[in-house]
Image 1 (tube, one colour):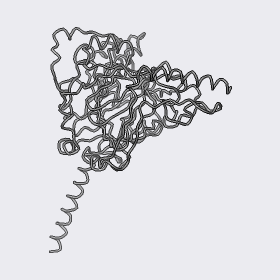
Image 2 (spheres, one colour):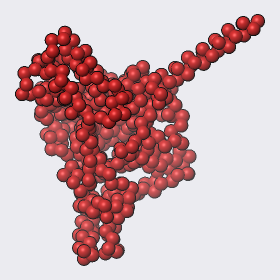
Image 3 (cartoon, helix red, strand yellow):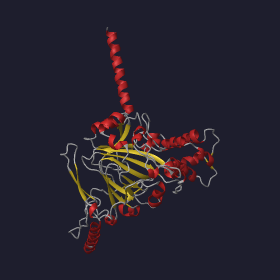
Image 4 (tube, one colour):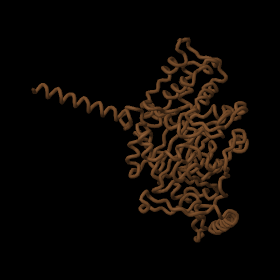
Length: 469
């Protein structure tokens, strides 16, 4: 066994030496400093440098950060201009190949405008969802608060924002040419906003949707792994989600528990302000930022189409001129006052097709069959069921069969509006974070209730004072 480990280490060393001979320029050192330029200095070497084990009984990278178990295969392919949709589809989306667009946001107002002061003054009254900086998908904690309140405390708190990009903020970001027309334009279903003071770390995971992740401020490092290596990472996939993650700790890979992680091949990229990375649906990745390194990102989630094909007919007369994201048709959005922040729901048209496919061999959809479909599609524990009080019979009667005829046809499902489908989705699966006015909400509704209580107290004091007179 020890001889096998030694041979493996020599093999990995040979790969590493070959890599650095051909790609020396890709190795660099940076320092991430705090805002005052002194405290919290974090030395960063990325990609991490593979060092063979000197102990034949201990494999290389044991109990060390992910990436130190074998050298990378090289950087993610890069472009200095954003591809047009057809080329984007043919060379990357359909081929399951990630890419990086350098300076894709060079004309975006957000690059210059999105200081803390600007964001707080212009968008501080919008609700956002926050999570802990070190991601843990088995028992994570999602909170809701005002963006302005987050900006007041985020330098000192173990929190970062990951939320639906509020509608007003869309005006500061562009629609990228790669998704400006064709099928991509019709299946852009969610935009996200990320903000932290640095020191964030994701789990090793994959997402259900195609994702273009663009950096507006700071720096992020990405490690990218083809899904063919999921078996070595022990990736789990909860049945109610289209995403999954590895239970291995990326800060300290235990090769006794996960010995095959040394077989996982990976590529890498570092994003700076204005850069975007395309992460294909299902492609495994791990993301890091560093202490004192304020980061802001925007992500665009989309699917190719219902049947994973691409129709470029709407691209024939496209000029690809700059236009803001506020002009894009996005399925799931958030504006001030919305009860839910609609994050993590599936593509609306995919949801429609899932319902249709579930009674493919049946002529009609009955109330009982609809209940079976929803319970199978969205498995939930008792806590979540209680939280949304899911009543599939009521949903069916209110949205699918309001006339009470007792069945629904395929044509009727096809004719449902996207707004109706979204309301069905909201009532069948739990929201990603607290709803406005819930006991654990600390956003706009909570602040409004505090102000209302304060006003009532003042009025009661005034009345009591008058009575005493």
